[in-house]
Amino acid sequence: MRCAIHPDVETNLRCGKCGKLICPKCQVQTPVGARCPDCAKLYKLPTFRVSTKHYLRAVGTGLGMAIICGIAWGAIEWVIPFFSLNLLLAPAAGYAIGEVVSLSVNRKRGTGLAVVAGTAVVISYIITLLPFITFLFPGGFPLGMFNILYHLLALALGIFVAVTRLR
Image (cartoon, rainbow, N blue to C red; front, side):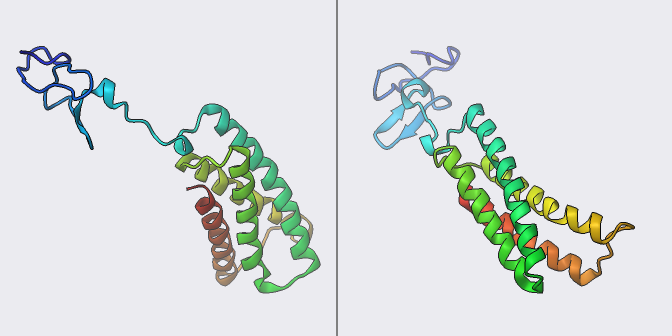
């Protein structure tokens, strides 16, 4: 007897559901026994099946939230010029972006959606810095090493929170 998928392989193994002859190469081991690839039908969970439509919706929502959060983040920093406030505002923006993107795609999860949310946090942070750079420092934005590390830490916290909402 020969395998239905690989006719050059001899076998006595049959699918536990349909009875089709299968070889050890094409068998799929399931809790109820060996199955052929057609009967096993290994699918991802519906939560992790993200279509192109969902990605487009996530990108649009992420961009909109990045603009809104960037403006709000910059306005709060301008009104309350407290040095460590950035370490609270970045995770708050990340949470808001991650949550709204998650809601826009019906709570689906996945690496691609996490990348969209993380990128939206970066865009939000850039929007926060744009007015500050152009109005206060027309010749450039002088930052010391401590300030750069501080801003990167805040940005990393925001990205981490947004990504964990969608992974």
